[in-house]
Image 1 (cartoon, rainbow, N blue to C red):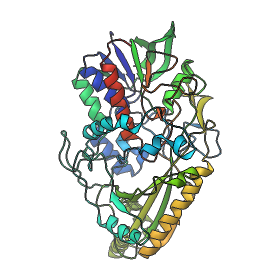
Image 2: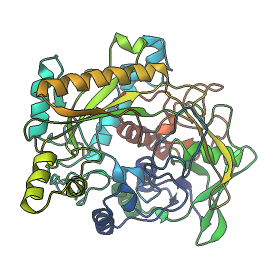
Image 3: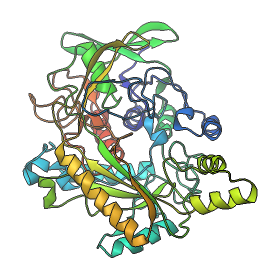
Image 4: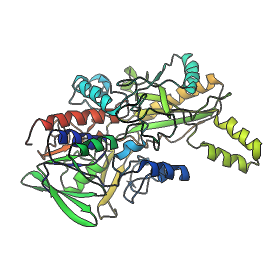
Length: 503
């Protein structure tokens, strides 16, 4: 087992690094804790079970939707509800694929607004890698033609216009035309938890490219510890086919996520005082209603359009920026079979039931605002006294939303309410708890030595042959979903590493 590079994790960050380095002639091993996904089988499981938890092979050592205590030991004021997949391709299997670039102000929060932290990079440093990432992921509205706004989007836009709100089609890593061996989107409205045809990007795309370039993949091989000697990381300890083995390489790339990366560093004794701190996400405010007339959800990707004008402004000195997404997937608890069951319980049957389901489902409205969170050291990942199935400490999570974020959640409710009122909607419900089921950031942030975990090249301050890629390195969460920026940073890091044979 003579490898030059070991990449831990096969999500978008790990698979891009593995592909780029293998294409540059490096002998690369990519290690993934979970199994590969058979798309057809996953679609069938979701169709039969109707729940996201039923879609993917799921072992005991990961969080599940609506079960925040299953894997995390919750120690914060609010439960941390983030969910991620341990499968080949990572959590991009179930993302919604919105791919906005970060703003310059997202990287300059301290300088511009006196809150948060500045990045050790400027937006100009990322721009060429953003463009490359948009091509690699197949972003409609950037590298590809944009998707069309839906009828539902258009009705929301008409109402939003009264208040000066601008609805626009959002860039998305979803094929609007056949591209890169993948078909164009067919509007199945199941982007979460799975695109049935692979029109939406997931990181299995770059896993395949890495393998074609000569990389090796070990799936179902959880890493349990990193081993060191003489100031360098010398080996990865992992569990493969029931056996504990070690594999060594001159270069290690940790590409798990903002929970699993610090957890592994802490358990291995490789952490500094900042490792695991500054855990962030994007708190999601969900609001639903019934339009007075059909708006026809379920006929497109789950999100096509949104409102981005609340991302930035002087208000960010005191409250968070946010993006409003228009949901084309009805209600979170309003799938047609669920609505049908509720109506059956009320006595509907036959043609009367069919008409009632159609009438209800066709009028469902959904608005979701994702609000940025500030990096705070008390929000962190540490090690629990409770062990996982391999005897490794589970993640202990200390998390609470700040007033900075909560004030913007309140503001987003007002935006949602105004739009609903102008549309003449009824049955309005603003969910009380603002969850963040997908976005993760911080915990291994980049910056100056003595104030961070990695430098601007994503190299560990303490361990010169260890790099961390992924949203764990973000100094601030920004006002956009993290995946496009993760891809851009991975491309930048891989390009730099490919140019040097030794580290």
